[in-house]
Image: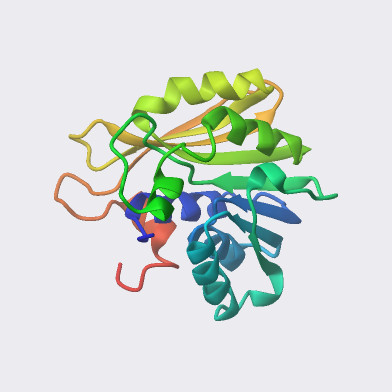
Length: 217
């Protein structure tokens, strides 16, 4: 799976919130991008759960070659079968996006990009099951699924605490949302982040979030 700009922004934004997390869970960790970005900015112990065997191999390799190997654990498992005595302070996921759209001939790509293996509702149900009562669950979603996602989250008593609208530029509509859910209704903290400004340069906010991760900003 490729490292994408929106996933990088998501990882940087979550890490920047400085949530006092002792235990972090990355659902559908892929190659470990989000886990390692959070590890770079926090001292938490991180469980990175990935169902696809080839992705898990790369995940394990990336973690083993990072400075945070002793705090990150690559788990090859379906999150629906994952059991832990820990209740996680922070859970994050870049979940399947493209329900009902064309699938790839590659099964691993399908698992990562589609909901054939894990529905949105099941994702939220599993997150709530192992989330600390004062914890947060963060997701990156396409803009057209914002209302649906918030509605599904409410069905398991998770409510939006952070909402970030992500745009390619000031002239574009939002194409992604980054949302942090918590247990119990709270006033949402909302923000709009544009990746590039009107001059087609990375925005000040984007640089602020990504400068410690991108080599050239």
